[in-house]
Image 1: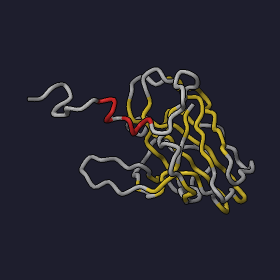
Image 2: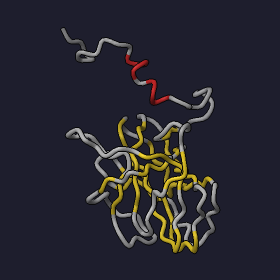
Image 3: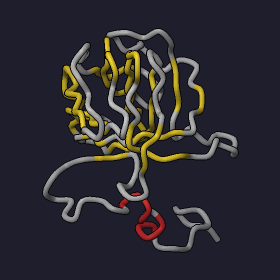
Amino acid sequence: MTSTLGVFKGITRDALGYMNVADRPDPTQTYHRENLPRVGLDDVPALATGVMTSVPVYLVEGDLVTNLTFISGSTAAGTPTNYWAALYSPAGALLGQSADKTTTAWAADTAVGFALSTAYRVPRSGVYYAAINVTATTVPTLVGTQAAKPVVTGEGNLSQTSGSALTGTAPATIASPAWKRQVPLVIIT
């Protein structure tokens, strides 16, 4: 016998508990979404110069996305020429981009917020993509984790790269994404 939950017999909220690990103590106080729990994270080489890295993040209908925040690890950006963040739809279409921070320094172990040029109101709950690109002599490492390659048909990447020789403008789509082992943490406010 199946129900609206298929053959799942457990308590749905308990099964989805992993999505709330290390979440804010009182979710009514400060809105934010993130793609990873903030435990067990490390310094990961998630970037390559001029190549966009994007990660899936679940957003809820009605969320108002204004900022994407990434945290550098132990390596600072060395001689950056362009860096920005962008939000993409579930289909991989560009929804919004931050201003290009160009040559602004990005120190090690520093959270950098990227304000979208226009806030985005989420029309439908689902998996969206937060992306970052840094073009620099030395790209910063980011706080994040390592993930396995998808093995089940239809399973998505937890981190992916796309584009090359990118500068100040986000691509219109996430074209030909390639799996990436390193998954950076992104905090969406």
